[in-house]
Amino acid sequence: MQIEEVENKGLSRTYSVTVPKEALAEKLEAKIKEMQPQVSLKGFRPGKVPVSHIRKMFGQSIMKDVVEDVLNESSQQAMNDNNIRPAGQPKIDLRANGEEVTKGEADLEYQMTVETIPEFEPVDPEKLKFTKLISEIDDAAIDERIGDLAKGQKTYKKKAKTAKAKKEDAVLINFTGRIDGEPFDGGAMEDHELVLGSGTFIPGFEDQLVGTKAGEKLDVTVTFPENYGAENLAGKEAVFETEVLEVRGAKEAEMDDALAEKFGFENLEKLKEVIKEQLENEYGVQSRMKLKRAILDELDGKHSFDLPPGMVEAEFSAIWNQVQAEKEAGNLDEEDAKKSDKQLEKDYRKIAERRVRLGLVLAEMGQKAEVNVTNDEIQGAMINEARQYPGQEQQVIEFYQKNPQAIAQLRAPIYEEKVVDLIIEKAKVTEKKVKKAELFKEDELL
Image (cartoon, rainbow, N blue to C red; front, side, top):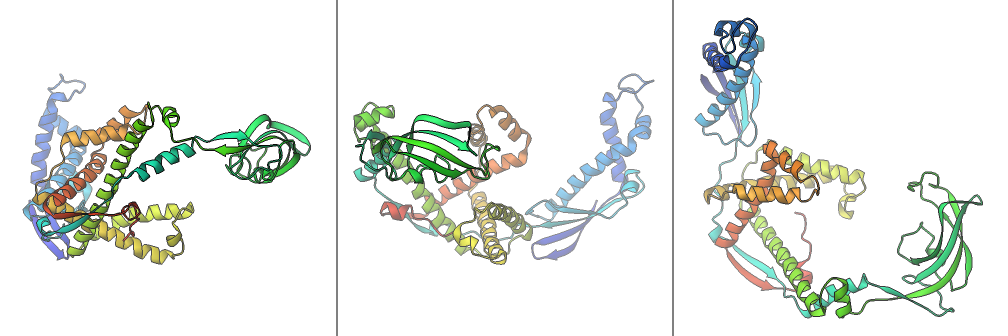
């Protein structure tokens, strides 16, 4: 086999590879002999079909498999011989006539172009300094969380007959809906409690009940939304003959043992213990996330090297597809929604470049420190992923077992977190106490 470098430009390398037809013929013979014991043809005993007959009947077809194997082997050898660390799959450009090659009449000739991982020296983590933000969990934070639980356990108490309903009050009502004077299925209810401002009824219905009193009767006119679930009602105007039976005021649940019991705890103290544990976990996750962001910002700022264009383009393409989907769905955040596509593309290309750069830096640091992801860690991640699909766990696990690329996607975040752990362990990290608002303050995207 002959391997010759024909282009060396930036991070791109192109090699010309020639595999003589004689070498292909040898591999073909070896492949046929390997197959011979399993070949069964009419007129021959199983496993006794002559090699010459197999070659005559299936030679060209088998040669196609041989050529594919040789392409993989020779391209890998070309990279190994030239100490290439590929940044992606090499591109193969066949230069020989494919049919002539498979017939054994021509050498296999092709050019291989591959992008390489840039050579750089990652920063020594022992020379890095970081500040870890932490926030104490006080009684006020625990009471605030329990207060939120109490708000979800509101009860409603009957008000005086003269009381006018206001938003966040509940009204007990009877109603009958008609379209063009005719009642429709599902349009009537009795003794129904409706919280005003909850948005559970047709838009406009609840608003017209604000200010009503017990005993009052009124017609509520509304129009069903165009996208309403029942096609026979969508977009149509309806009049609901409505009677207000009671106006009820909201009363939040007390922060006491009774509230705790509603959530399955013995008493309020036990509920507080559990809430404190939850908050400790949330604060810890946020503190770790802030520290990791600081680490990534520092690594990004301390490294400057050429990036493999293919890696950047692949990363940008994935990001841009998501941005476009969010734009079409009207889900872009307020700041991005004001930007032109040109500006958005520029901003998100910078993000793609940052991600690729950091990925390469973390990979290099991990390699130097011999960081590895174990099979048990991969298995754990696979099981966690499967649990997100109740009833389909086995199918999810089988999917990962059959798709190495999917396994790689599980491995990547585990590897990244282990390298971050390594940096935290070796760098100088000091703690700084801050208020909850600062700990949970959102960072800029870039």
